[in-house]
Length: 417
Image 1 (cartoon, rainbow, N blue to C red):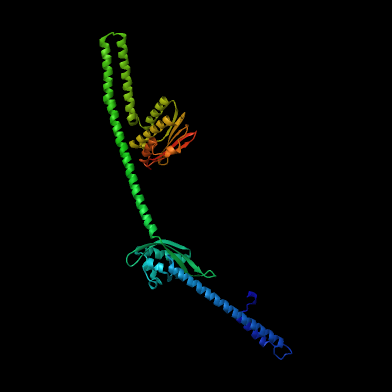
Image 2 (cartoon, rainbow, N blue to C red):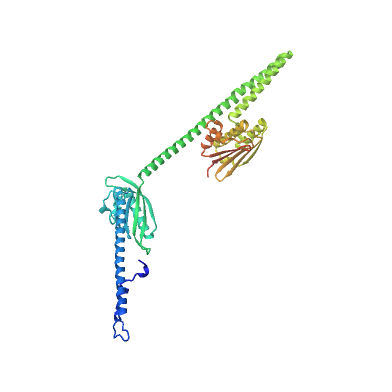
């Protein structure tokens, strides 16, 4: 039926009355036969239109009833909680899934009764957010808990959206509740696992620090024993040999050569003991501080390897406590050892800078570059030791190798603030 042919009953009646009351000159106020036929035809057309409109209205009602029946059927079998409210937010409908979640029956949920299904501790907050949502008319979503009469708690994710007519007026609201109890339970388990992992990590860090402290104490004890005990005894033997040499007078060349060899070997042994003692616990670190110890380490590295090594130190070492200073020294010592053994480098640079509340250490070489497999491997003990040292002070370490260009180690250690 074309829209152009539709005539409202009020408009048609007015036109008919006008036709009937029309006075046409020369007709004594009566309608002509042709005009009467036109009026009758128009009324018949309108009658047909009304009948067609009535049929269409019945079809629309049938479709609406069918859609409503489909909605209710879907709502009944849906595992998702469904609710409908009027424009004031009062509940007018809930499905069976919603009732199971809230522990209320249909009648108990109507009006403001739905709030009784909310977990007591959540009611005040939910009520406030729901009222705020009604005032704004925006989409609403929230996570909260239901609690039924037996005390069972169901976590839900609730969403709601306005129901509007073609003119944009809000008629009410429709929403869904999704059962997220399993997800919440998984989140709780995950959080518990993360808390335990964090606790274990902290304990492991503390254990690592304690192990390093015990190790360094043992190194210190051995270093002192070597220096104070063995070193002094070797020096005493050297002095005794010199005394004997002065007392026995001139000897054969063979005896003279043997005594000379003994003195040389003894001096070499004394020097080795000093080097071992210094390697175990460099006294320069305790006596002169971190910078002096690293400078000594760099000089020894240059001397023993022939590899050029530059040092840039822009940090107040007084900001580091003794354990951290020792860790930094050992870290650089291990890095230089790895460069000597594996890198094939000709140049090395070491930088220590204060950035914000941390000490940043960058160690670079121009060698062949470490492979990613070795960085990730659990068999590279040197790297593992470096990572453990840094982690024990809650720092970070990043190791990157570029084939043919070298390796870069970047360490950040928090120093307070």
